[in-house]
Amino acid sequence: MTKSMVITTAQVIKWKQQQRKIVTLTAWDYAIARILDEAGVDIILVGDSLAMVALGHQTTLPITLDEMIHHAAAVKRGVKRALVVCDLPFLSYQESISQAIHSAGRLLKETGVQAVKVEGGYPMIAETVARLTAIGIPVMGHVGLTPQSVHQLGYKQQGKTEAQADKIINEAIALYQAGAFAIVLEHIPKDLAATITEKLPIPTIGIGAGSHCDGQVLVTADILGLSEQQPPFVKMYANLRQVITQATEDFATEVRQGQFPA
Image (cartoon, rainbow, N blue to C red; front, side):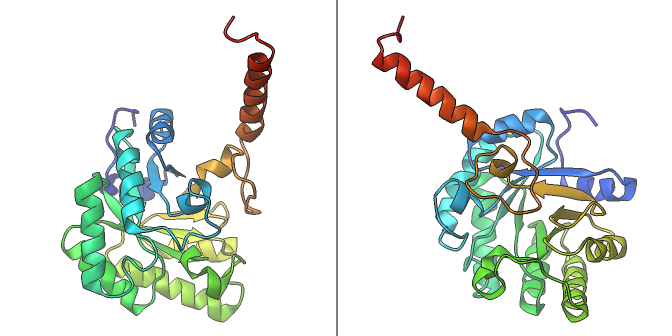
């Protein structure tokens, strides 16, 4: 695959069949999105995690659909080839199927993203996914640790008991049967992730779910070292927080000492 190839949901599913790993990262603005796209990332997720990394909230819950649309539009303007997926934020799709259709439709129409992501795989969500996909809106699922359920689940690993594992497996299968083109598996045991990955003909994208998934996703602010706190499963590939701090301090020093401008 060349970097000029425009990626579609069909291509992502084909990669699963080819056993080609899928690279996914998050973006929240034009600048970050353009860098990720030019670097060859396959899927760019406008995750509701931007509520924390870009807007300073403690959880993902406060962000609104209008705010997600604002950020997703900026991200999409920076992308030429990657598949752009946007989270439907908390309470923009859980009230009713008609609400979900309206929210997802706004995202596609007003931002140009190619797909939406929803959390959970219980019967109402599976039915919602089926309705969305039936009218041509691609959907990525998300099971395991679902951050929009933080007040119920916390941020601890899910699926550690047999009953919990069976529930997550059944939810993943239900999402596939409803038409989801891929499913995020977050913070679950690696053996459980391997079981789900083997059972499903669509890609699994892991985050804290081991190496057996068809792809991996992390929050870009985490891998760049911009986050104040990081999940235990994150690998930091750079420390931009330190770099930016040093650059700012150097600029301030030169201004105060009359060295800048020269």
